[in-house]
Length: 287
Image (cartoon, rainbow, N blue to C red; front, side, top):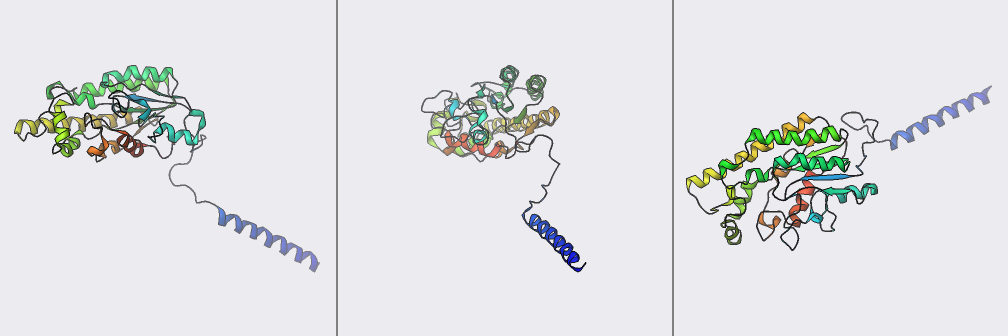
């Protein structure tokens, strides 16, 4: 009887020891909402980029043309740690399945057509950066009205939601063009290019002028971009849980002339594309 009791005690002690060992190696419960049936680390196997010349990589190569291989979103070149390349590191299935439908000069009214192409490509992840050209008009009076801008963005998102209801959408804020003017107005090279009036004239024309009218013009463009960003945020929220707003991170980038090309001193160079890619990249694809 005593021997049986000793055996019973040893069994209990062994069970307790195993439980303690397991507890020491266990990871803490993650904070936040409980994971869905889809793995929290699930990465998309295809993607598409929508937008304008920034996402098209315009001016980021030696030639002053669109250069999608350096795009912050779908870039395939070794020089840029794009979203595509980051995803590829964790999901080889996306290889060769990243489409860039962004067009230089595109305004918000082009978004619906680009969205149709993303639907046809069956993209599982879509990035959107649009609006700079709506503000970069020849005159302040020619900037896209805020209400019209919102309608065009909603139209594009509606095409995506109808055609790709399970696709994850990343809505990126418009960079701070007023900040760009502030850092470039004292640079002779940038001023020489901007003074020609071909690069975002609503903001950058007469870049060294301190006349009241010019200061009012620049502030009007700054305020319009702020209004566009607010509508992008609201449009994404109205879209539902499959759309993620970047939290204004792209707009908060403190751009310097080192992050733009030396031809127009406006479009991001490779370093600028990398900066954009990094600040808006979803660290976890959980939405």
